[in-house]
Length: 287
Image 1: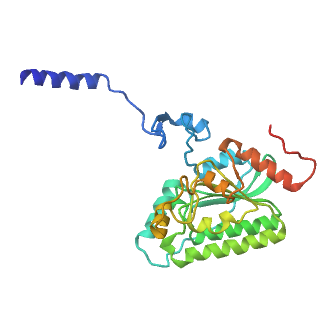
Image 2: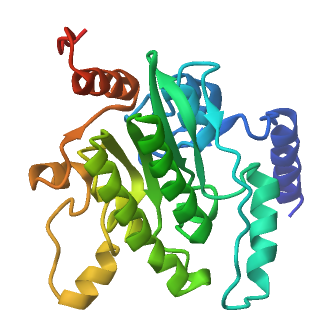
Image 3: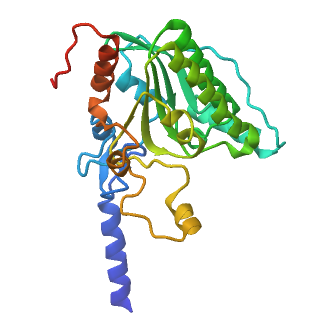
């Protein structure tokens, strides 16, 4: 027993002597390869794992930094308040807490900016705010942006990420599908270019409305895209789903999206599409 006590004491002392002080928030774990990676290394690599190529989710702020020319973004000043039609006691508290935590007023940023000098109206959904779910304010901000694109005669770019409709707002959240779709009909009649970019994950009412109605639908590699989740579908149809079902690669093969674009190439790709749509002497070149 004395020997055991000595062993335990030595083991504890050794651990204390060799304890490493790892700063909180400086490291991130990849869900795919399980490696612990220095956060700054990931940020410098477009938020992509340098070991396995796995895509980390991006906040709307980081997405703006990657896509919009520095100093050109102007957010629409929209003073919109959330509603609580079901009178859920916890819903307003949750919204207030998220607003403090994220610095966002809702799950989408909307404004104007430039992509390689080309003016656009851009909307970027943010998964950090109730998983990018679409409620009345999100639907109204998207609709306002569509109408603004028509007014300014500018291309519309929407980065989609969503878990679906904001069920805390009941049928009002579902009505946003029809409202945004109707606004996009007017955009199409006006001849404006609309490009949607589907990121991980894009589900529910967002997929069933404005995410899928673009002139050109792009997606990031490995993004999960669909209406309901694979598990729900399997339980409903009682059949085993194909391998890779609902990934952007599967959907590209079946014609649901037009092109998968790597994150570091997205800005250049969007710039080329916009310039092609404008016409002129621009030639598509892979530079």
